[in-house]
Image 1 (cartoon, rainbow over the protein chains, first blue to last red):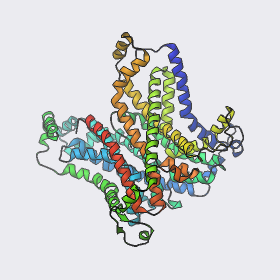
Image 2 (cartoon, each protein chain N blue to C red):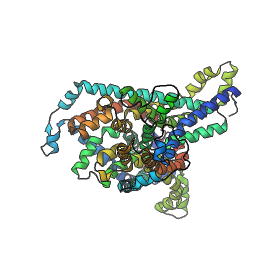
Image 3 (cartoon, rainbow over the protein chains, first blue to last red):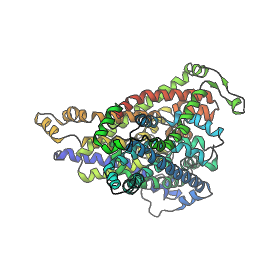
Image 4 (cartoon, each protein chain N blue to C red):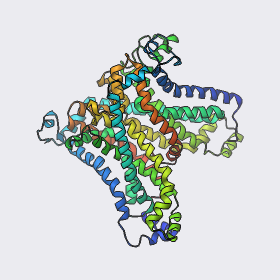
Length: 279
Length: 315
């Protein structure tokens, strides 16, 4: 940018920016800070701003009993299964949509856009009844069925962009060199798609890992909770009495998401602004 | 329209046309898994929900009595229930207020980022990313702690500043309950708006701004008559998305309700459906409210879909 704002304006903007930074970062900092403090310090009349001489006791209390590890196992299974199925299904669909012209193609794309906008809140009643009828309430399989469909539209939409981004001429060149159509796709296009698949998969992971509404509806038994549901019940029990452990639990849930998000955000942000949507 | 794009493609890709000559079902086969997944997990429940909304489906049916057809009774019951309208109006008000505040703050941050020095801007962008990356439940839990009656930093700070906030309970009164919910929702939504609008702002040509400056436009006039019109399409899409997303706010309300606050005075559409169906066992009426919410979403979504399709040349 060639235009430079006047110095006064810039200083004012910088100061306001630092305030914005504080509002963004402080809650996250406070979560980590509190998770490292002794109960005595958390309950003191004045806040302790830095975790000097901190403790890992809060984390130890999160791991007491098997509730947390149990929820972690459920969350991991649901998330990994969701990402696998969604990636395979979406990849095939994305190839169909971006490498072929066929009847119903446009309607499929429009349908994806529409589906993406359906709020779970407007569907979970009958989704609950459906799983109840199939005896799949409180099962990983039941929740995964819905999660796959929930992340599919975005996944297809994004992968479609990646597939289209690999010029078809590259495949044609390989075919002229004697590859079959399938071989050409597998050897030329597929490797170029790897970063796109990883980024899209990570995004699906974040969505499934964070999902709360369906999980709270469908996983009602205490030993079948996913991590977000576990955190809210853990919070209900310990709020006011053990904020340190509650913050330690939040930190543990947030870490993988924040790390993954920061890794893929560049790719995803450009996708978002280019017109793809997240739901 | 499809025909036009096809001929264009054929013109560009002779091979693409040739490879279609033996009509194959390959593309349809590739779509099949995705289609099946969507049919099973979304289309079937949706169809079933329509049926459910015309049935009496209460506790007796939970214990095996066949559901009874009641025609429009669930809907009639709802439409004549003033509480539904309270919840609907409350949801719409909450949604519009949250979307408006998010947009205002997000656009302001985006405009500010243009004026900041580089190091500060990078810091602010990292901060926004961090807030964006936080999982909803984790953010919600931290904000509950910040607003905590006894040990919350916000009460401590406000007391220090001379307010009477010692032991103040934020979730007791509906108004301040929704204030806390709004803070959480806005905090989580601003980064997306700020980043998207900032990206659009960097596309505004400098020549345009210089021309306006030469013509004697002050900074505010430049924002109003040059910057805002050029980013208007982006603003429109982002605002629509905010409205659609804020209409369905569930987690924040659900969790805060459990922490205090009377459910009846704080229910929004999502939590109301939950309480009716999963909580109260009245699945027929809950399904009818859900259909209502779906209709509301469709009305709000239509302009968004139209905008997206207008952008999609390759359809």
